[in-house]
Amino acid sequence: MTGPSAPSATDPEGAAGESVPAVPAAPAGQLTHRQKRERQGFRDIALSALILGLGIWAVAAIADRHPKPAPQAVDISVPVQDFVAAASYPPLVPAAAPRGWTATSVRRGQPADPANPTLHIGWVTAHRTYAALEETGGDRTAWLAQQLPQGRSAGGAEQIGGVSWEQWRDAHGAPALVSTVGNRTVVLNGGATGADLAALAGALTVGR
Image (cartoon, rainbow, N blue to C red):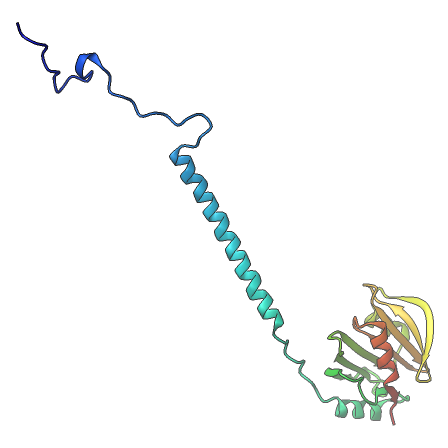
């Protein structure tokens, strides 16, 4: 008698008809290896974005700590003297700027009437805001329309240094001061606070 024959090497069933065990599937509720890799990739991207954002914030914070460059000062003395000499009325000009202010612009305009020049002086205040003096010997209504377009009177007035100043608001609601004496109309504006404009008004004197 012969014993049972050995299973053939090509027999997929193996010995005695047994099947080759299959790779078990992932249990229900558990992630496959591919899903785990995808989630890990999303986490890596989110972490990289977070690190990049923190880096940008840190650079901006460090840069903000550095002091900003001081405004470039200009000498207003000669243009102011020329303006006083040319004006046919007693002009208001700064005797000295308030403490901590820096004059950054000055311009003397020459309208059609040489006796009524205009004067512009701009300052950066100690609070790093902007204040300006705008003066003319011409028409008040036209000057206010030019310097305070869509501005409006706030309905009050105050005496500063012996000069009466009307309280105004510009188109954005920022304070302004207006003084008219004879042919002279002076506008103080620029976005500075009311206190800074009052300080500027107190620094003005009649030019000689």
